[in-house]
Structures are given as structure tokens and as C-alpha cells.
Image: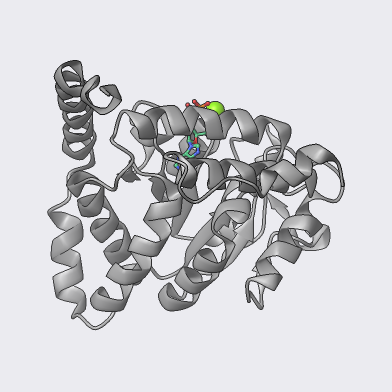
Length: 265
Ligand code: ATP
Ligand code: MG
């Protein structure tokens, strides 16, 4: 082990940026274990930046999207949760719990298919308790229409009516929409192509979203389908994204006044 690796475990809990550093180190560890692609580090950094200007909390606007997302997964006939390296590195245990509660299988789907990566992600998910993981056997894969990248190789996603795509690439979201699938995205950037193409966009950090979805799923599971349909019908994604942008504007406006309070001696 290098001295650098030792440092990864030395972030004191009292550090004001402890949470953020903890997940940063999970991503770095993930990269060392092949789970996260090099580009995944950059994607994480882009996410952190948006999280900062959202106040690093799950907003009420995001909670609305989460409720609509859970309701539509419960109503779907063949829902699936697509898994990439960053998600597997950040919240593997929670992802497996959510998949079980919602009866939505997990399928590994990667943009960067370095040798051994699929197996590395499969190992992480199995360690987290997943029994069946799709997208791992080349013999079972088929090609999704309208997509050039490695992400075209899919298993259950081909026939799914709903796909949840945390930290997605815009190209695939677009391709999934063109195939008439319902797409749920979790993306801290409210202006990414993914966010704009999805049917339900949860603008929040995946590390907070998945635990929140678990809580909401426990409640909504007990409810009548007609109630769930009402939740989905009343949700307007365009309006929700615009409300998120308003929250960012408000946050920055407030910080213009308050930003220096915290650093005064
Ligand atoms: P698009 O292809 O949709 O236009 P992009 O090319 O800007 O998006 P990608 O690298 O394809 O971005 O995808 C990464 C996305 O994941 C970014 O929008 C980033 O904000 C988001 N992201 C990164 N980490 C997290 C996280 N922990 N939670 C939620 N979103 C995240
Ligand atoms: Mg992209």
C-alpha cells in the first residue's frame, strides 16, 4: 500500500467537508479496483460542483421527483435499474435494497468497458447482497437500436418499459426515449441532456437519492395503484427542472449576502 492510499482513511470526522471527502475517496478506491472509469472521477467532480450550488441537500423539488419516480417504478411492468461504476462505488448496499423493494432488477451498463470492469462491478454488487445481476454475460446481450457507444449492449433493458438511469450519459437517455421507454434520471446537473430528455429527473446526489427512494418505496408500496397513478399524472418534469433552477438562483443570491459569515473570526 502506498502512503497515498493510507491518507485516504485519515479524513477526520470533524473535517467540515467530511461527507464530501468520504465519497470522493470511495470514487478513488473504486477507480483503483476497476469499478470506476478514469472519466468517472471527472463526472463525480462535475456532480460535486452542482451539489455545492444546491446547498448539498435533497431539496423539496427533488423529493417531488423522487416520489413520482418511485410511484412510476411500482406501476411499471418491466422496470430495470441500470448500474454504472460510480453508482456501484458510492451506494452499492442501498442500490441492492432499493432493487429488492421495488422488484426492479439491476443491469450493469457501461460506457467504458475496460477488461475486468464488469466483473469488478458484479463483485461489488454481490458483496452488497445482490443475487441476480444482468448485463454480465456477453452471450445474453443484444444491441439496442440507435446507439453507437458500448452502452448499446444490453440484456433486460431491451425489453424494459421503464429504465432508471443514475448518472447517465445523454446519448443513451435519448436512445431509450426514442424506443418509447420511460426514463428516470438521477443527475445533479439540471441542464444535462440526460436531465432534459428524461421523463422524471431527480436533481440530487445519488448518495442521498437512493436512501430517500428506499424510504418512499416502503410507504408507496402499501398504496393503491390509482393513488400512484395520480402522483405520476400530477408530476411535471419541465416545471420541476425549472423549479430546481430557481432554487439554484435563490441559493446563489443568498450566498451573495451570507457567504462570508461562516469565515468571520
Ligand atoms: P449529458 O451526456 O447528459 O449531457 P454530461 O456529458 O455533462 O451529461 P456525463 O459525464 O455524461 O455528463 O454524466 C455525468 C453526470 O452525472 C453529470 O451531469 C454529473 O453532474 C452527474 N453526477 C456525477 N456525480 C453525481 C452524483 N453523485 N449524483 C448525481 N449526479 C451525479
Ligand atoms: Mg455525456
